[in-house]
Image (spheres, one colour):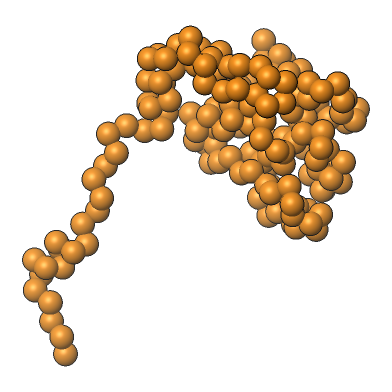
Length: 169
């Protein structure tokens, strides 16, 4: 029988030090500090989003989510390639404690359908490239299509992200 002195056990199993700030605090500080500096460059259309732009958009998304009753612990899923809106949505979710789940676009259809059933998201966001697959994945809530600035339009059952966001006003 092996015995380990109590002081060695306590020294071995220490918790890591607490972080000095939360993700929300770090994001807010960055917005204030860097204001008009560029933060995100969109490969989709070449647009540039500055810290101040992102702060305003993120706040608008958080307000819209709150008005819809999406709350801490709820799930929001995305099924899209990299989109600036997906980054803004992630930051808004982080502010509110909402679980942001990006689904892999390379999943087979059955896997996407099973994940939708398992996760039961409050909202489901996707892009035009993934729209047909997303609309047939069995999600019965609101379908939100990330804006596509290439000129493609989504199917009539999807709400464009900009329209969804403007409903918050």
